[in-house]
Length: 172
Image (tube, rainbow, N blue to C red; front, side):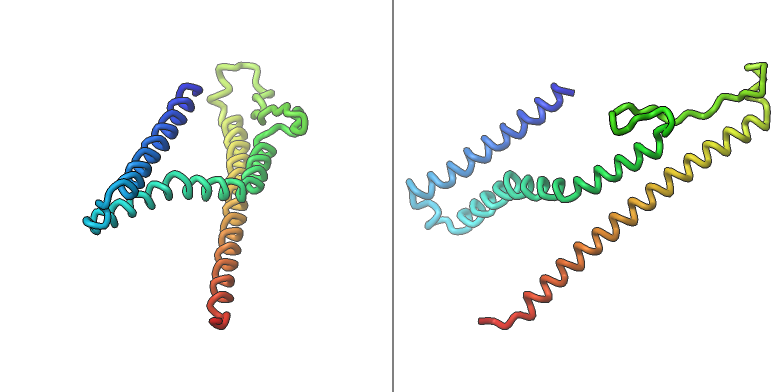
C-alpha cells in the first residue's frame, strides 16, 4: 500500500516537473525569440497547452479538495450510520472504537450439528434474520441516497438562483 502511494506521488511530482519544464520552455521562447509573433497558430496552440496544464495541475486539485471538504460531514454521517447498522449494540462500544459486528445466533435447539443445516425451521429462521439485516441496510442506503439527492438539488437550486440574481442585475 505504501509503495503504491509512493509511486502515485512520484508520478504526480514527475508530471508537475514536466509541466513546469514545458511552461518554462514556452515562456523562454517567448522572451528570448520572436517565434510566437511569427507563428500565430503555434502560439495559440502553446497557449492552449499552458492553459490545459495549469487546469490539470492546479484547478482540478483545488476543486477536488473543496468538494471533499464540502462532502466530508455527510461522508462521516453515512459511515457512522452504516457502522451502527452492522455493529452489535450490546457488545460494541462505538464511542471508544470497539466495534463488534452483528452475528446470527447459532441454532440452539439442535443437538446434532450435522443435521442443523438440513433443518428447514433453522434455515427459515436464519433466512429471515438475513433478510431483516439486508432490508435494514437497503433502507439506510436509500435514506442516504435521498439525502444526497436533496443536497445536490439544493446546491443546484442555489447555483441557479445566484445565476438568476446575477442576470437580473442591471448593467452599470
